[in-house]
View 1: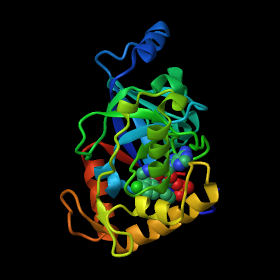
View 2: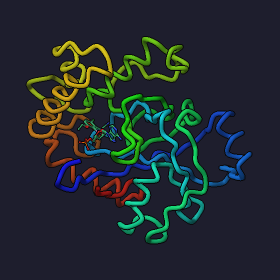
View 3: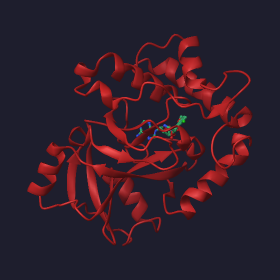
View 4: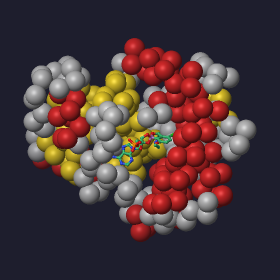
Length: 256
Ligand code: A2H
């Protein structure tokens, strides 16, 4: 845990089709998603990269809460993060963080989702083993072009779908180019993962190095290739993309 507060953008990713298994569980426990809007809430430091989302990651080690946001809307995130949100004027009632239901990440894997800004209409929920319960919302949106973690996890899912208990068709093979830097081209995560010879999502130390390099280069020297702010420096585009998402009700600012 750092000393300074970290400002995340909470991205609302709508679940458009629960798997039959998830539906069975939810109904059995008195929750019918029919006619409701259920969102997986992903915490990101890079809202300007949402043009490159290819899936949404959850952890099978985490029991997520399903929280009533009022007006037929529900959030799926860790109880820890919803508690924090409840003291930041994000939720309906200050200090009320009792979930309607607990849902293990495993039940969510395979569900169909719709995420803002990505050109891909339907994405899937996929498993990521390295998600920490103690950070963000426990939900990570996957941007394999710019996040080394996301790139390596995606590659691992593609290489060993049976091991991960997923359908290979659920994985989008190619990252979407969204940021260009002179140093690493227009797929900085892929470039760095290859350069540092990172083989597995468990290569924690090299991944940390790749993350730092990708983040610094992308943020300070990157140019956005997609969307309304195409051609603008990432540093300048980030607050604009974030504001547009928040104004459109697709995201919110969350601190921890
Ligand atoms: B970032 P920091 Cl394109 N466990 O979003 C593991 N990782 C988590 C997490 C958790 N509980 N919650 C959030 N994260 C990820 C986009 C992105 C991110 C890009 C490039 C780099 C990057 C798309 N994924 O982060 O420890 C989320 O991934 C690299 C720093 O608070 C979030 O931003 O600094 C970032 O880690 C937050 O990590």
